Length: 518
Image (cartoon, rainbow, N blue to C red; front, side, top):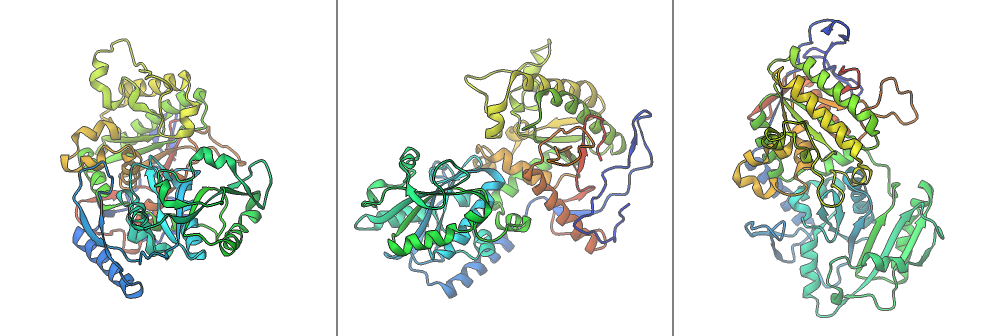
């Protein structure tokens, strides 16, 4: 058992609770003393954050002269946010060369990995990276949200040694040019049918609108038709940078428009640290997460990634989760709040936490209110896979929770159920389409306990029934919690980094159909 003062390794797993005697319904021994790992609900004080950002900008200015000050429009054009004057840490000259990302094929964590690769590519090609906009969890040039509305740009720039520019500032530069600037559209793909490992015309690119919401009249493609370079496997992908360099040498253009649909890394391997240290959310998102945690008090956080789990398996998995939560509460009576983050659109069920008032008018049991068309899940893939059987299984989970966990003293919350109770000054962020995923990630890193479904082990022995997809999203929560626990161990079990402390009591526990969280 871990005790404060022990040194954790990266492979250590802090147990949630000791094994339970299933038949007797008792724990074999009392729960271990929690690791007292305190951390602030949120980030550093704004004063410290401002100092660090200012220091970073000054350091950049010593290396790269500032050609002008740019008026940053609102982080999201549709929002009524104040205008802030910030100097750009790069020169936007008439002969500047840009790498513009029109589309990144994958989403969520995978898209973030790809953006790091593209930052490295921009350096290789000696181009300025134009940070893409964001739609839900996808990066593209048509997104509703600017990059800096979601992420802290200095953090991304420093970690990846890149000098990026926001898309709005690139658009300002483009508009300021007296004549259209030279441009080329390319698409990179992997494992696609057709010719491989050479540049070929790509008429299909026109279907994807090569300029992707940029001002077409300001881009001069000349006789350059869209090109496609597809390859197969890791070895072929690593040739892509040199192919692009050769293309640039033969016909240099100011703007390289890129539709990026590779899967393998082209410039160096990626690590988990690359991801966690490149993408830190903008301060306001931490404030929203802190407000959510304040509303709940001490809590058990749950992530349930249902994608690729059969509908038939979801019902016993839901029952197992309820049993596990009740057992945990028996041993941790101070934890009465349960925060559930899931890719399933549970807010559409009549007995979901956000619709309890509706349930009072539904005495015959939970139902699924099917909207027009296909209901949208919190994952594009799951949206395509949803069936009536999924809705019945998740309705059964809610029914089980209300009949077993609620009488035991547990309260179920989701992001949607807490949204209306958040402070009004945070509504600009809290009401965004991407808010549930962003805030839930930050919340689950800080809940006292964290549970996730037993994953489906690809190619390995499945000792317990799988209840969740093996998710990168879950892994990111776990890595953040491990970092906090390691810091606590190095400080004798206690680490204090600010106000509003919480206490981590585990790393992660996995539940399955047996009702045990181990």
